[in-house]
Image 1 (tube, rainbow, N blue to C red):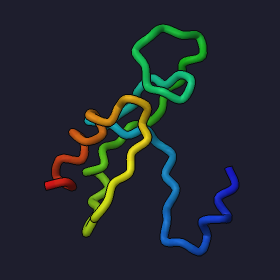
Image 2 (image 1 turned 60 degrees about the vertical axis):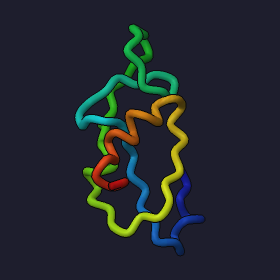
Image 3 (image 1 turned 90 degrees about the vertical axis):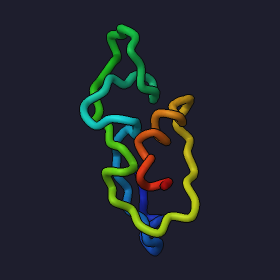
Image 4 (image 1 turned 60 degrees about the horizontal axis):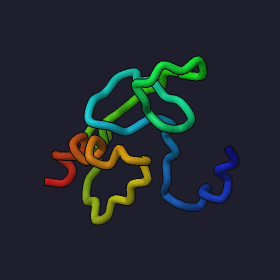
Length: 79
């Protein structure tokens, strides 16, 4: 992807899945799944807590139904 439009902002693009645990997870069609599918690949999953973010005022999630798992993985960040 072309991320040049973000070059002037203080952003870091990290390609991974977000959830309540860390490790490899199955992904298919852009969504994490437990279904058997010939097009399934494995991607790295991280928790938001693992990023050790500080002074966060706002979190925007678009995780296609996995909001609760991502929020569980952000427990320390939210507290």
